[in-house]
Image (cartoon, rainbow, N blue to C red):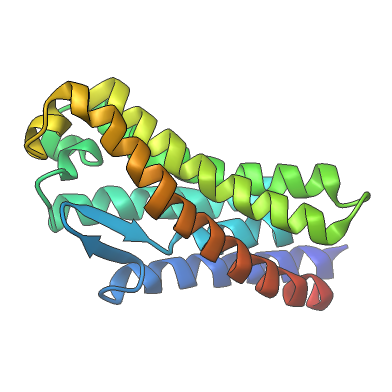
Length: 196
C-alpha cells in the first residue's frame, strides 16, 4: 500500500514538473495564434486523470489553470484580461483561467473510471476527448457569458458576431486540440497504466 502511494506521488510530481516545463518553454505549452493562445497543456492533465485518478488529474489541472493566469498576467495579449484578474480587476477572470482546467483532469479521470470495466481503450479515448473538449467549451463559454462585450471589442467585432466567431474556434482549434490531445493521451496512458 505504501509503495502504491509512493509511486502515485512520484507520477504526480512528474506530471506537475512536465506541466511547469511546458509553460516555461516558448511555443510548447502556449502557442500564440493571433490574439489567442492555443495550448498543449491539457495533455498531461488528461493523462494524469486517467493514470492517477480524477482527484490527481484535477490537481495537475490546477497547475495548468494557475500557469494560464500567470502567463496572461506577465505576457499579456489584447485578450489576456479574460484570464487575469490583475488585468481585468474581476475575480471571474481567475475562475475562467482555473476552473475549466481543473475539470479537464477530473472529467477525464471520471469518464475513464466509469467506462474502464466495459472497454479500457474506449474509456481512455472518451475520457481524453471529453476532458479536452470540456476545457474548450467552458473557457469560451465563460468568455462569452462573462466578458462577451469587452472581448468582442478587443477583437474588433460586434457582440452579435462573437458567438459565430467562438463557434468557429470550437469547431477548428478546439476540435483539433481535442483530437491531437486524445491521440497523444491514449498512447501515453496505455504505457503508463502498464508501468503503474
